[in-house]
Amino acid sequence: MAPSTPLLTVRGSEGLYMVNGPPHFTESTLFPRESGKNCKVYTFSKDGTLFAWGNGEKINVTNVTNKGLLHSFDLPKAVCLEFSPKNTVLATWQPYTTSKDGTAGIPNLQLYDVKTGTCLKSFIQKKMQNWCPSWSEDETVCARNVNNEVHFFENNNFNTIANKLHLQKINDFVLSPGPQPYKVAVYVPGSKGAPSFVRLYQYPNFDGPHAALANKSFFKADKVTMLWNKKATAVLVIASTDVDKTGASYYGEQTLHYIAANGESAVVQLPKNGPIYDVVWNSSSTEFCAVYGFMPAKATIFNLKCDPVFDFGTGPRNAAYYSPHGHILVLAGFGNLRGQMEVWDVKNYKLISKPVASDSTYFAWCPDGEHILTATCAPRLRVNNGYKIWHYTGSVLHKYDVPSNGELWQVSWQPFLDGIFPVKAITYQAVPSDVPSEEPKVATAYRPPALRNKPVTNSKLHEEEPPQNMKPQAGNDKPLSKTALKNQRKHEAKKAAKQEARNEKSPDLATTPAPQSTPRNTVSQSTSGDPEIDKKIKNLKKKLKAIEQLKEQAAAGKQLEKNQLEKIQKEKALIQELEDLELGV
Image 1: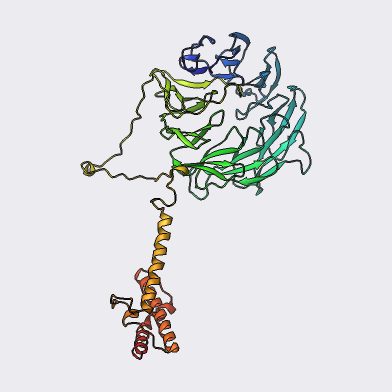
Image 2: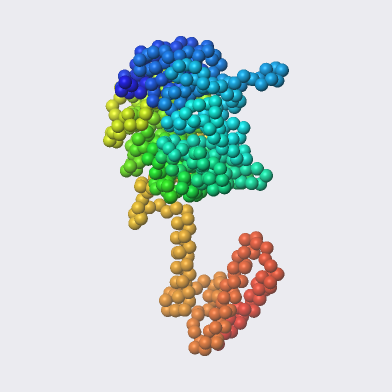
């Protein structure tokens, strides 16, 4: 039986070892510490029972539950390891090398039978990117990209290619999760004016013009990221360009596309311009969260119709992480941000906690759905290395700091299959902890000497937008946005103009004497009783008003046309004509 809480594996300058999960956090006796700095790689099987690691001389495979060493492979240069979903095959990869005389190198991708330890097949895999073959969950199908086409093997028989998917130049593919029927999403980059496209196929129906389940093409794409949901009903595609031709961003331009297995496709309309930092599916497969837009970034949950369900407002964030059960969402700002996290109950859209994990380079949910791991690892950061275990309510339950002369390279949870840990009710009260809480150091803004003895004015570079359920409701005294204020001013100006027009028609209502500066108000306006004369007076006033506007434009520096200048020259004659008509009333 697996342990009741997941283990924590730690790799660094102090060696490779395992730590018991919450609540104990003591070094585990299930795995003896591997001392030295030569450990380059380790991996767990999907169910967490098998563990493989490289110590610079051999690749060892052990059973975590009974502490038994299963196999040892002589692969000193291996830097990548991966188990197949049902623990049948161990894939290893080492850098590809060629001899000095130019002859082809030896195969560097090995597939080993975990049960017997024999090598099932060796391949040449030059690139480290996408090195590992992709298996279906039941291991019936295995696929790998070879020379711009996808080769499919069945039942781990790697000596026979069962099927091939051949298009112009397949750059990448992703096999769908879940049971049969298996689906595959392939990406073909555009060339010679033709657009890039992503197509979905159902295995093994690859032939014929109508074989594709769905197709989505786009021009703005130098690379794509394809994300299947857990039920394999839809794919999210993040299309990225290396250069933003508008000059709005250094990091290129990204667009988000939705492709369903039933043939539907759409561009996900993101309300704020800017980069797409992260997109993640909920485990329910019915909604996804996107973090996007220039800082402070917005975060929004969308449904399968690509309609926004909930808007989290803006904040310093660039990543999103759903809990294994999908009921809690963490929005975080790592990397060049301060490590602020927001933990949300996504069933009720209620904020649970706002912890801060400064200088974090790694984040992972524990399989139990309650605990969180954050770490500061080298080589991303070589100072203040260490890791923390949090409860999602914001309490730090365990903290480990690497000695100043040491480094932490990797830390991760032992994985468990879905359903092992039941869903627990969400609590909003912080869990008690023995670890003293650290108040994050708040860096004060620089103040020049002339302002240091004066009161501080709170000015923000960006106004942060609150989540939609924290915005003031209609009818309350709420601060208006710039657009709303502009519209309000326009409305008030129109109202004032109408009132002025009424006052012009009804002199009794106009109690204040009209200023003499404007020609149209030089005399009181009254009706003559003759409709023809009234009409002429109205037209003259209209012309004089237009001349006033032209004079204001000229004063503002605008270059006027010849006919406009001629209109201004006629102003005196028009005023005289207006006075004559009104005096004759």
